Length: 181
Image (cartoon, rainbow, N blue to C red; front, side, top):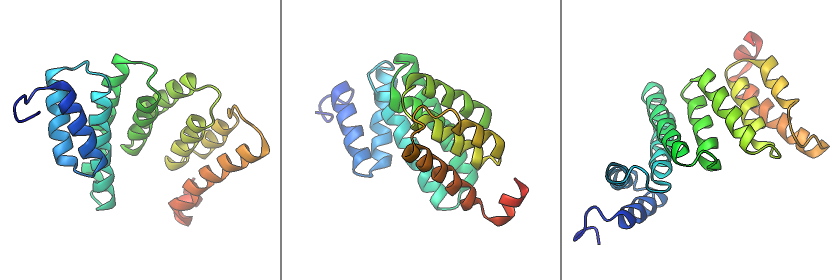
């Protein structure tokens, strides 16, 4: 279809999404960029493009290219933000934007994004745990532990799992960072 109709919206979306799922990030990015340029309000187009950019950032992070990864996370967050302009309650965009901003080191922006995610999913622990983990990763231990007080499900199992998730972030930082915190 794309050979005969290079701006067919559905074909661009299906191609880009399929390519992302198969790890063909450059191809996915090309199709999805064409899609958002052709139809900026196409449902989930910005989310899918943000997802591709997020995966590219993850690859850069694994390769030890921290600064380029941060820039790519910021690009991803911007795409998730565009999807949220189209659909303010799109949960995957809310969560992905909060996490992308966190990984980019944009702590204040990430806090705001996490708060929006928490408001959109008030019965779920995931956004609160993610906020606490983000604070832990930023070395803000008091705020990390304070965030855990906001868990909507404070059952023993849920609280234990949330605490372990945040503790793992502190443990990953290493002993020198833990003492500094």
